[in-house]
Amino acid sequence: MGGEHAEVVRLLWGPHPKPARGPRPTLDLERIARAGVEIADSKGLTDVSMQRVAAKLGVTKMALYRYVPGKVELVALMVDVAIGPYPAAKARRGGWREQLEEWARRLLAVFRQHSWVLDATAGPRIMGPGELSWLERAVSALDGTGLSGAERMDAAVLLVGHVRGITQQARAAGPAGNPEAQLGAILGDLMQAHGERFPALAVAFASAAQSDGQDQAWDFGLQRILDGLAALIDQRAR
Amino acid sequence: MGGEHAEVVRLLWGPHPKPARGPRPTLDLERIARAGVEIADSKGLTDVSMQRVAAKLGVTKMALYRYVPGKVELVALMVDVAIGPYPAAKARRGGWREQLEEWARRLLAVFRQHSWVLDATAGPRIMGPGELSWLERAVSALDGTGLSGAERMDAAVLLVGHVRGITQQARAAGPAGNPEAQLGAILGDLMQAHGERFPALAVAFASAAQSDGQDQAWDFGLQRILDGLAALIDQRAR
DNA sequence: AAAAACTGTGTCCCATAGACACTGATATTT
DNA sequence: AAATATCAGTGTCTATGGGACACAGTTTTT
Image (cartoon, rainbow over all chains, first blue to last red; front, side, top):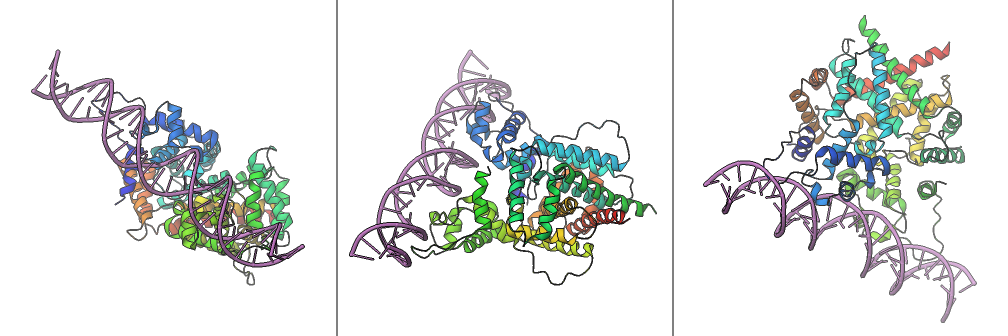
């Protein structure tokens, strides 16, 4: 049961006892993960190979296998390190809405900084302590709102989905020359060129191209979700 | 400009003139893409290799390169074939809300049937005609609601994000023995085991485990989004 | 009939993940 | 202090992946 997942769990959730005998380890999981994150941040996830991570640490490829069972486990570790624990909870201010708003904004910042995390976290997977601490924060922000436990989790998942969606999205706007703007421009051209097949899209996209781009889509979705939650919470309050 | 994307565009958006001279092609893009989709559906995206796709078609690996520039382009094609065009629009019934609800449900069905599409569509990319036809349908469902073009697109993107989020999510519920249920169980165990670090999460998850599972999260998020849209549309109507 | 254009194949190269045996370092045990 | 078990890093090997390239065979045009 969960056989192949067992190693990921052990790696992410430890414990990692230091060996009693034998030579001192040159590396540790933290350093390895950070090396991988650096590569992924600058060159993308596809450029992360055991070779390159090892090279960055001044070690042979095979040395890494003393710490990490395989590449999938390494990537899982990288994800949790990149996301990190939720920033230390200073006194929480504001109601659930303000709290969730700040939470979502911080999460978006993390995803923007490590956009490869999107690739690494497609599909169901085991989450690490860092990722769970984010989830914990979102769920606990909804304590006392009258929502059930399942609903509080569903709300958090909904917000995560929006953050992911925005991170993934390409819009025509933005500084010219960045690769995402290219994509948006190409898509816009395609819609115009096939305007008869996509009449509503062509119009909408032309209008969207003049707006503020990604930030607008972000705020729009976030406010819609929070409005929807507010409606439910209000309703439950009666 | 967009140099590397040009080939994807040509592949997805054609034209594909049949050659005047030379031997008749054994294959066509459609068959190749479908072969890839079959493999991905049954064994996952990582098991899709040029080798295997070619083998399934009874040709050599290199024969595929006569039709497809490379693997990334093949995957892009597979995605658009798997998603397909939006089902022929019978007379549209209902208001924007009913239309979007049906639209989202259909999209979820597609993602559930081809869950590898999640992996293949992480990150900004060029969309094919099939994908765009879905987007067109969602945007046009919001025609006449008073939302701006940008807002209509943002709403569609928001819904897509939710569909993706749900597809990606693993819940403890579901038929025992399926791999996703395993994941949910493991995560639940972890939360319980580290309950002191994730108090709100442990409680919420325990409550969620007794609920209907994924379908509940789906409906919850969908209704919240639609409620949020309704609130905005109402407000604009005045 | 010859040439041109095109398709599928066979062979090559390079990068990648990973297995395994080996050398050497370190701490416990005798 | 010496022997030994344990562990770290290395070098070598295999299998699999994507892709380049030249070549032979086929079909249309000249």
